[in-house]
Length: 192
Length: 227
Picture 1: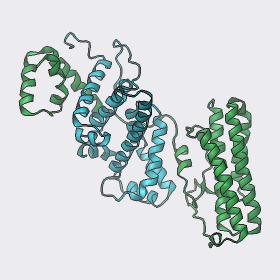
Picture 2 (picture 1 turned 90 degrees about the horizontal axis):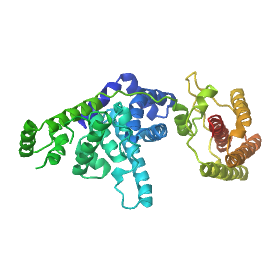
Picture 3 (picture 1 turned 135 degrees about the vertical axis):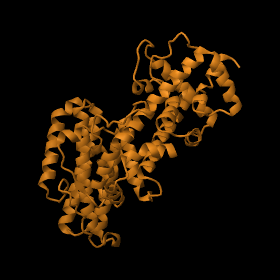
Picture 4 (picture 1 turned 90 degrees about the vertical axis):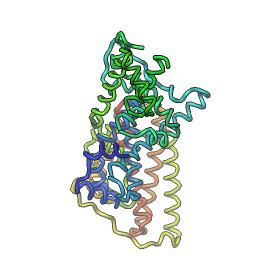
């Protein structure tokens, strides 16, 4: 989780924040609101990218409610931001699993990594990366965000998602290739 | 290995995630394939952009909804916040949840009041002092709290004005649950007149009032955002 810790480090670590985390763990709602405000952009951006924007606000709320419930178990062995980040990823993955289970009941046999892709926009339009992310299928987007945005390793992603590292690598490549096209860079004379 | 097979290895090549022998093969192919080199450059730019993404906060306030879900029992604060802020929070309850909450509240109220009146020893705990937050933005809720009454009246008035925007079934469930909560509040209030220091009753009274506030906030939010 070295890369992840590096990405999380700039948002926290002040003595005030450490104090607020301790106060929040003791039940201080005002301190928890300060913790929430400090970490909201990081958490919401993570959730928004992983979910493709669907229910991002609701899932972000779920994350902070879970943080509140679990704060007592935070022992300071890792940076609070790393702990919070991991918890947020787990909340999103749990939601994906619940949705996937529901979808499987409806569409038995479908490849779960192919479901719920947003409509693909014209290749003539160059999108920014944030928008292009929303066009990816759930599984490919989830792995791209974890690996390329958040810095997770394939073995960590495989463990989190219950897949093989080979599947993680294949889906990452698929996501990158789709994004390359969505970003208007796949139309060169050299395209395969 | 075909060109497509080489293309499929480009991400692993980019991530330096190939065994040495495979890496040499891909490198040799790249040296003589303009298409794969162009694709590799494009993939490199995608990865570079991903690492450069910046974080941003959501467009709307989420704290109100989070706060409503985490308020610790026995540490009841009533945040008197601007009404517009409260209604901007996302609604996260369903009709079955509302119905279940109302029913549970009614049953719990009846049970607690019965325990308190029947002399059940479990209701005979010593009263505990409420934890008062010193944050000036937080106003402790008291049983005769003018701010609470004003907030309820404000929310109730807005809900009455916007009621037509709600689905009739939603209105029916809301009214049923508000009635259940009001009944619980009334039961507690009458029981407290006979036993003002009963901690069960005091706590339950505060929680019932808080529940009414939260329900009204969510209902008015639902109505004013178009249901």
